[in-house]
Length: 106
Image (tube, rainbow, N blue to C red; front, side, top):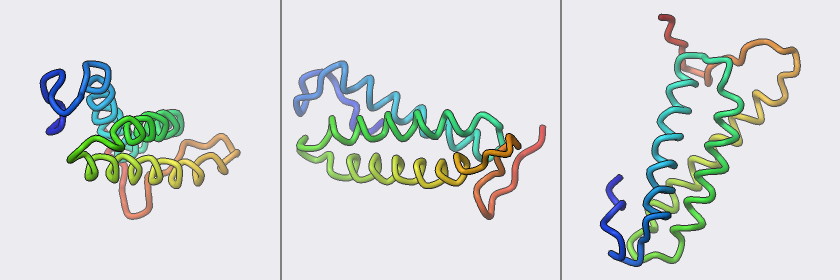
């Protein structure tokens, strides 16, 4: 992650650096699960939203991190939006990929 710099640079500690990496990792993993139509999207969407929001809150107020904060809030909102579509599906069927996307079958 671009903003993950050595400890004490810009007031960033190891815990924040770990959170930034976790946010990046869960965002990519969630996108991959959505793209392949995984039935496990729902719990990942919830977790991704939670981690991204935590990351945005932790980074707000740090100089030059405005873009990171905005990206984290955007990702959290997108996860909640897509998740709300899935959470309303109580039929027990596997969740469909996002509109316009097609699952990858291996």
